[in-house]
Length: 370
Length: 126
Image 1 (tube, rainbow over the protein chains, first blue to last red):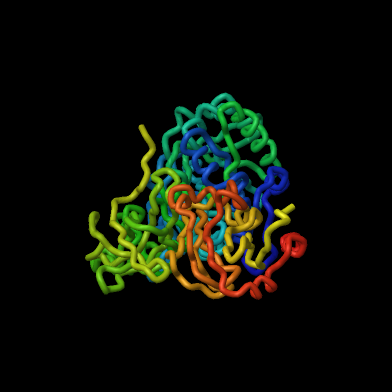
Image 2 (tube, rainbow over the protein chains, first blue to last red):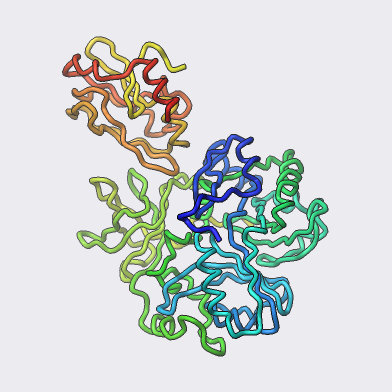
C-alpha cells in the first residue's frame, strides 16, 4: 500500500492530467491534480453543471465470505449486516480508545461481499487494521486499491451525462446505492455517492479501463459543460457541504460523536466491536468538543489551525476554512467547547493580529436545490 | 516576458518608480502560483514600512501569503478596488491589480531589487 515515505504513486490518469495542464501535488502518497483551470471555475462548474474527478488514490478493500457482515460489524462502528445488497453506509473505523482511524463508505455488493472505501492517506493503515480485526472470521480480505481506479462525475447534469453510457440506470439508483454493470462497454460498479453536496456518481473500474471511462465521460459531457476538477475544488465543495475531511475534522484525537457523526456509531448492534467500550463511555459522558460551522462576520478568512475565542477565552480551533465560492462569504468548521457551540453564538477567530467576529451556524453551509 | 520598465523582488513583487513614488504589485507568475485570489489585506495609509517587511496579505482559495514591501517608506495609497475585486490580481497583475503606493525613503534601496532579466531567470529556475 501507499506509504508516505515511499515515492508517490501515479494514478492511471496521470498522463491525462498532465495533458490538461493540471497543477500536480502530492496527496496521501499519490500525485494528484490540484487544479486544472482554477479552483473557483471548477467549483462553480460542479454546482451548476458537472465535474469529473480522478479519485483513483482512494483505497478499495473487498471483504468476502460467510461472515463478511459480522466481521465488519466487529471491525467498524456501523452495522453492515443491516445493509441491503446494493446499498451503502457511511461508517468509521475507530481505535480501541474511540478515536477515529478513518471515515469510510461500506458498500454491500452481495450477501457475503462488501467493498470498503478508505481515504488514500489511511488506506494502508485501514487495510492492516482490517487484516488484524478480521482474522478468525470466515472471510477473505482483498486489498484492491492499486488495481482499482475511481472516476466520479458530480453535479446536476451528471445523471444526464452518465445515463446513455451505462446499463445500470443511474436515475433509478438510490442515493448511497451501488449497481454492477457496464459503463462505455467496460465492467464497472456505479455508486450514487460523492463528496461535493451535489447529485453524482462514483464509478469503480479496473485500472486498465480508467482511461477509457475518463475519455468517454469527458466527450459525452462536453456539450453539457463538464470540466475536470482537482483536489482544490473538491475541498471547497465538501466544505460548503459540511462534510468532514480526515486530518482536518477527523483524527485519532476525535470521536465520531464530537465530529457530529454519532449516527455512524451503532451502539445498539449486537456483539462487541473495536472501540465499543470507549464509545459507550463517550456517548454517556458527552463530547469534550463539538464541531461547528462558522461564518466570519468581518474581514479575513479563517484557516486551518487558527484559534477561536469567546471573549478572552480560547474555546477552540479552526479545522478547515475558505472563502465559500457559492455564498461569497468566509466559511469555516471548528472544534469549540460544547457550551459555545449553539447556533447564533458570536465567537471570534484569531486572524493574524486581529480577532474577527464569527457566527456559529448550522451545517451544512450549502444544500443543493431540490 | 515580464514588463521591462519594472523592478522585481525574489518574493515576486514588482515595483514601478516615478519620482519618489513606488507602485507595488505581484507578478503574473506569483498570481498564477497562488491561484484564484479572493482576499487582499491592505495596510493603513500612513503606515511606515521597512524594505522587505510585510505590508499586506494575499489570500487565494487555498493559501495565505505575505506581500513584502520592495522598498521602505510610507504607505500613501492603496488600491481600494481590491476590496470588492481581489481577482484583479489574477486578471491584471501589472495594471489594475496594483496593490500599494509607497513614498520611498531611500532610493539607494532600489539597488537591491532585480531587473527584468534577472527576475525572469529566477522564475525559470523555480
